[in-house]
Length: 245
Length: 75
Image (cartoon, rainbow over all chains, first blue to last red; front, top):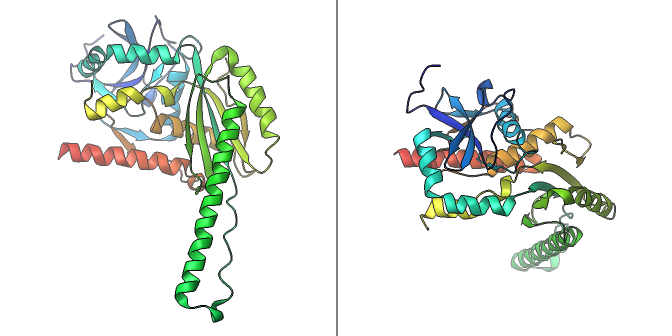
């Protein structure tokens, strides 16, 4: 086999621990073979990249996800974000300089998977325009309309928070960690990622399947199990972005 | 452990393959370990059929923000 140029970019899919091999059948971005690169005591799933950019296409997005998913039955990986292209030297430096934080991250997600819950609702109907303009000045009409809008915002916020609380109570005791985003003004009112220990996944599914029957006014999009994308790098990202060690 | 999407219930106009792409994009573009300055992506032929759900919108915005930041870093 020809030697790789030292500046050859590696497309990096995820980091793994305690993994000795990868599925030789799995193909990565641009149908490239995937290999396991060992750095210190950790591993990284990579493929050689002939290009310096990675287009976001259906095939590439699915390939990225499929490579990471291919090891999920054997270990809990720390996924890299789509488009991570580095030289081997950069990758080695990154891991060596952050090894304690990476090990902490591995410990946090070990033996877990991520389950995703998205809740969609029909936003409450907007209030009808003021129908009494003849007896009110323009300023009064404007203020009345503004008051109704604010009341609507508060009502939506209260409803969204109630949904978030309901979901949290539904899965309480079944999650090790969670990331929840609530957007009262959006149709996608809640997006949650739950870190669930593998043995608890069936019970988690049953709980949500039963619970959602009680909320026919809401639409649910439940998916998983995923590798722990949402729990990979909160601490690390902060350190990377702001140089805090 | 099964790797398929286990439960999907959204509007009747949604196909399972669309949801798979939607969820995959939401995960791989918005989340995961980041090595600063090393995300090199380009928005290509993803259909904008998910705009109503705003998940893909946020994903594409993330991608574009990354590209902008990268261009700024290069300047």
